[in-house]
Length: 455
Ligand SMILES: [Zn+2]
Image 1 (cartoon, helix red, strand yellow):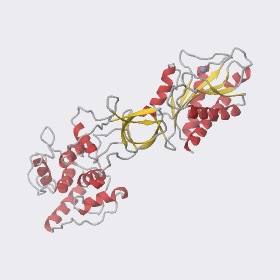
Image 2: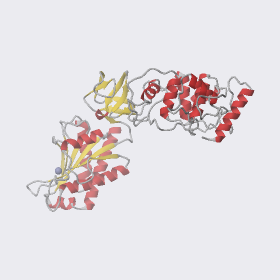
Image 3: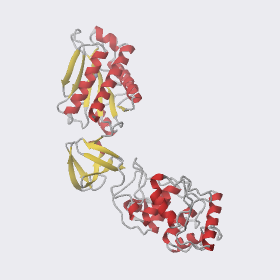
Image 4: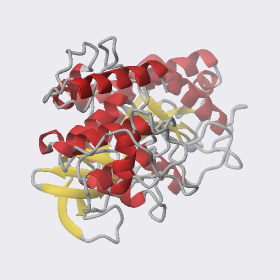
């Protein structure tokens, strides 16, 4: 709590009592955030928001509970005459006492269970939700929920009401952060939205991002689980706007359709927001091919980590199905990638054959995949970079229904770097120089793919 603000407020209040100014005419504050000028000036013009004596708004100062009560009291036109309150810790001479008592009488504030109000404490977002829902008599609720607000908790109803009313919204990670304090800017926005529908966050809310449907047919539901009724269906390739993330579910809109879809069946479309899963084949008890002193699981992991380094430097998010010597069942590998929002999946392997003369590099996709075109394209970009970079025989791009790349909702490929059973290939697979060249080439092929997708 800033003493400066307290005295400033007192000064302005005394001045306003002495000289009655209908519009609460305050001088223009020059530090009001440009993005919210309309809303905040709406409150300034009505004498609901008053700046510091310096003429500043100080947008990022935390709002205390007595300041919040004062702003709400002014917004509702409550009696702000200073007087005794029911709360023992509130000084009758404080600038906020009248508004606190009036708000109490109206049932807008109740104080803490111990009978105190704690006027100098910062207001939290959860407390704000309660205050705002009471102040503006909000009653409507909807199936919105936040990861960090329990439906059985005491703040759930208030937070739901302020969200449903379009007054407050959560964060893009699906949280509401009820314990977080609230700034002067944030609180001003809520009061402005409570007073004027024009400022409300639309029912859809802000668009967090656009995503594209990856499943053949995707159900849109009225709430964030399969127990909610189906309100529509959308097909592969449909672009949707994401307004809210609720665990694994996304509240989306497309055309006139609004509802929830499971995030697994969508992928990012945003340029620069690229994510790829790198799957180092084998691991743990499953060593893979073992010839010429090589252990396949070790080659695959080493090259995969190098790919991660190159891609992260290029700004691509990399999801590793394993980054140590762990066994992961085949079915879990692609599922892990999908559940972590990967746009595509690349599995890294090293080949083996009974005839040691067999040699070269090949990359697979599966025509059984739900994403045949993209998978084949990704495989082609990788193959064309890889065999040239490590100077191996080009065995081409092949359609083989390996388990980790077939029937998955994201484009998926499997790379065979070279043959552990062939002397020439094996010497490269054991060499950190060639491993690095392979990793760089694969990362470039992946970036070729992203650029092709975005073009
Ligand atoms: Zn393998």
